[in-house]
Image (tube, rainbow, N blue to C red):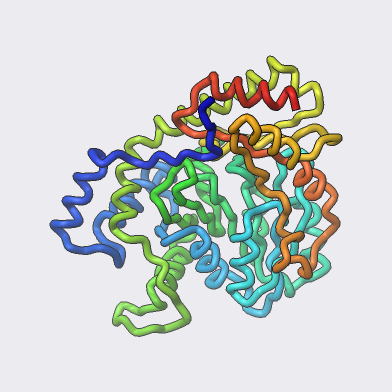
Length: 371
């Protein structure tokens, strides 16, 4: 019986990449915002954000969060409000900026940060809040209206949109026109993967200009360091993979959505959705990174994982435990975690990759039905 891995990243082929590698050989520029990087940024801004605002690539999304937070934070603030149901990179970015994560519970249905709780904390903490960092959980087309108004009121908002590149909603690509900053991941495990990389977008071109300066050692045009910076630039080789991936990305999105639909149909056919299994109330056209589901409340997700592993099916538990239960973050402040704890006990992340077939999905869901 064939093993079904959790993720099976498939970047671009050698043939698709070779023309860009030849350009690198000709230019002999390998980093420092080279010509391929400039082309990648322009194509993304034009094709995905309709030329509205500005973008800058980064070496990875964690660095992107650190860069955005370090440049946009309120100078006398202490806390960064964020969900606990997220990847460790989110709270780590706050710590690296000398700030403290303040964990907020999520909504029951979409698994995104509870904005009512955010509002209450802003009233209570006042100027102690340095920034707000929502996470678009598993790539959902999170409604940013509330966060846009927050940012416009003077409270910086940095959106952790790690899995959201390629996500489309009613008004276009996720984050388009947002006045704060939106950070996307281009890690190999994401639907738009270049190995290691990321992208920061904002409608505010000045903000992106500041971040771009920060990721280049804080250099002025005279190559003098004017403020604290670091090296967060993307190499030309990763930009080459990005340009080649742009050509294939519509197909990749379609393949991932097709696998997601196979899962939904199989879950319905096996009547699992009427037996306590639940799907995220996600919105928009999402190029799913994996298939997140909740097992019935009376079951334990780790037991489900073990049952699947016995059938050579690899599954995970993103995000269980949630961040507030990690040793490094356990002493940081948090709201009540009613839904975060509830979801994290039940979350099961199933395999989803571009070359999966419908029989693989049937095998996985059939095994779940027997668990």
